[in-house]
Amino acid sequence: MIAGVLAAQVASYTIWTSQVRASQLEQLDELSSNMAFSIASTMKFFRSLPVDYRHIVLDQLRSMGGTRFFVSVNERRIPVADIGSGLEKEVVVSNVRTILTQQLSIDDVVVEFSRPETLRVFNNEVLLYDLPPRWGQHSLLMEPLSPPILVVQLELAPDTWLYVATLLGVPDIFSGYRWLSEERLLAGIVVLLTVLALSLLGITSVTRPLARLSRAARQLGDDLDSPPLKESGPKEVAATAVAFNRMQRRIREQVEERERLFSAISHDLKTPITRMRLRAEMLDDPLQRERFCASLDELSELVKGALASVKGLDLHEEPQPTDLNALTTELAEALRLQGGEVQVAGQVAPLTVKPLAMKRCLANLLENAVFYGQRARVTLEEQAGVVRLHIHDSGPGIPKDQLGRVFSPFVRLEVSRSRHTGGSGLGLGIARHIARAHGGDIILANHPTGGLLATLMLPRQSSVTDL
Image (tube, rainbow, N blue to C red):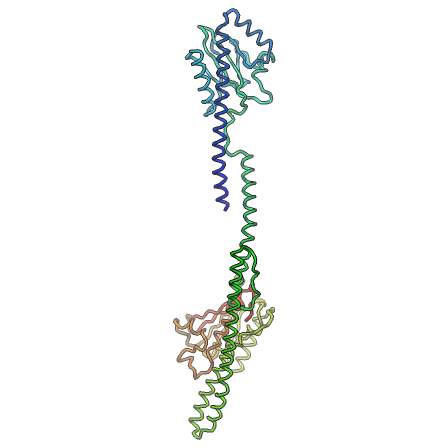
């Protein structure tokens, strides 16, 4: 936007200055032409006078004062310190020389510009400032300005030069044309800042609803119960907010319907499982009875896991500062009582999380590490506002192509993670869901020295969504 505004200003100033320059040159052309005709008339008048009367007329004109031209007749051409350059001077000199040559039929016309302080007007080279005020200062000086003086000399006869000095009335004709003056620069900055301020207000009013829509879209995957968007703003944004709210309602309804259906199916399965268990207990063959009951136990665990996957994640609790060091140590002590070996190292400051949900997340990770690796080492650290818990077990690890698959529900890898070892394959999925609800994630990788390395990442500054 800044580049566009600057480009527009440069283009407008270029057009404007070219027009102003052309207008000034046109005005100067007209002024110099009129001045040249006036000088030609003056020279014709002096050429028509007898030689003996020329000085008398000049003395009378000087005594009167206030004339437009300073005129003198000299025995030779008076040297003039010519000043100025550029297109303005070329226009004036060309017009005066061309018109005088045509009007007076004289080829030797000298046209020059001089500063008042260096101008000499007589044969004895008397400076203009040394003359009586009524002689030339009234016509050639414009106090407090000091415009250049146009001097025209032409030869009337052998050893007789007519000298005419006058002002064009343009004080800054040779001051140089500045395309970007202080005034134009100030005006350009004011215009630029004004346009940017107004544009910023307009863009902010338009993008504020889009920012709300963006935040709502990021939260939608973690919190379907977030408040609906405000359906305001520009027409297109308001229509988008309406569509987004409708989509959120439909997704929430479908998820709730799925949960109800899944819960009903899981609940209804308990009745036939119970009947089958009663019948299995009545079998006469102990081996068949044991196998049948084991299969029913496995089926029961699957049903419980299904219910946990649907309802177990719905932990509505308030986030509060939690000491992850103490929580990890507590879980490690509990696992040691069950025969596991867990070492905890490192310290981090308390983190705002949902305590019960985070405890379940850590418990799933530690139980998984101890169950399949017997031993685990937990390292806590914080870098760049992100708390990391590295859990390294001593197990066989996971094939690289299966690292992402183990987070899926009911997935247990063979052989080291077979059904006969227990579990429903939901622990890692639930742990990742809790981590992502806190704005973090869980990454699995095979450690170079062996075993599986699970990294739980939790940002310190993040909004915790409903689980």
